[in-house]
Length: 254
Image (cartoon, rainbow, N blue to C red; front, top):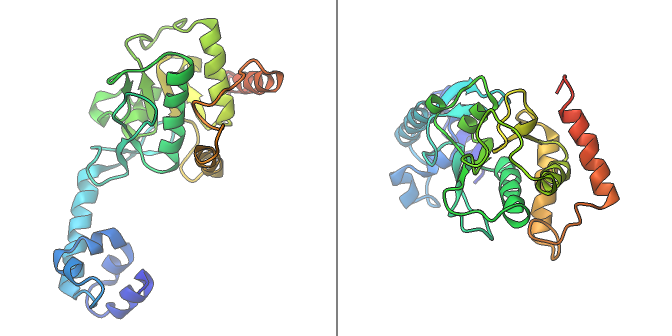
């Protein structure tokens, strides 16, 4: 039975607001309903309880405030919200806490290419989500609180300083950004530089993010494509794309 049909059948049991807002996952988490999920329609009381749990978790996790890139900051990771620990295949990292979905597809790709082409990473080298109370919200690092940014080896590239990468490493950084078609920004280009920081540079719902994430997922199932595959970052076409994006992201309006 579809969620729409289910809600229509139970519309006389609970308030309209609860029926419109409650997600299917919260409903299925109702113990009494889970036992007989395929044999009966949940009662109004069960739906109401699930809705109350959903609202309680919502207030426990969400802040209602965006980070500087427009994504909502959350109070916790792995707490039932949009931010959770995601695997980083091919690296020693057990996982990084980022916003799930298209964001994690993109940021995990950044981390993997860094590991393969700039310097091998070890557990603890990458910091994803940080509590809103621990970040400077007026700086790009505030995007970590929304799960849309990662710091890679921040001890090697202290916030506020530049020049931490060798020229050959910078070529790779620029190539990664160009490969992601500008949906990620490197904070080394910001007025207050943080060369360890990479963050999503488009607003929620921007179609460009979905397009890039889809490309990355396709590469994951295509031999010879994606992070870890041989890449000639010095190829003329790639260098031109990287330079074009560099000029755009370093422009005063960026």
